[in-house]
View 1: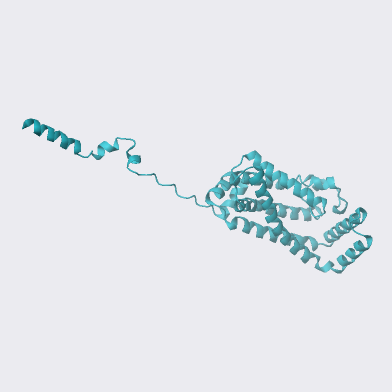
View 2 (view 1 turned 90 degrees about the vertical axis):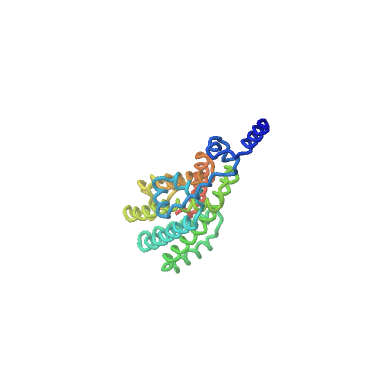
Length: 283
């Protein structure tokens, strides 16, 4: 009887559940019980004001937030609209000055003459274009302001598409088009500063399209600028700053290296600026 009792007691001890304190000492207990760690909460997007300050002071964490929290329409819509307003106001201000307006018209007429010499336009067509310009002289400020603002709006989406194609297929990044729109749009805040500085320099120096490039210190008329002089306008420190920040933005939103981001940013900046300058649209 005693042996049977001992065997029963032994079986009862084996069937007893293991205490909580015992299970807590086993490292794999949480995994074996099916418990999982909670996912970290989604990153909150910065406010547009914080993004504006961040682009100027700390672009890397700012664009990291854009990537983590996702793009917002306000990232590009607000700076694009503000820049359109600045372009329109700047155009009206320049045309309101008779001296500036005369220089701009002289540059346009010079462009017509170059097209005649290259065979792209006949002398009769050039004369007709000049007559049309004279007849529409009073409308030039409004036309210039509207076309400049709308032209920039259209150009913004085209250049964003080209940046996205370069990041996605040449640099092998994974940025979406929306992320590139956000990066390019936020850099627009620096472009607004560039436009305002240019407008200020216009009235200080008397040159219709002045910027901080070495051309600022050269005694040249926009109608007589050679192509190489126009190329020197690329050496505008604010524009270079904006392009550098865009390179950081492409790096962060596209998950590519800093070198690839800067190559993408500067290559398209140089190509498009040279194209617009060579066709006379760079001004």
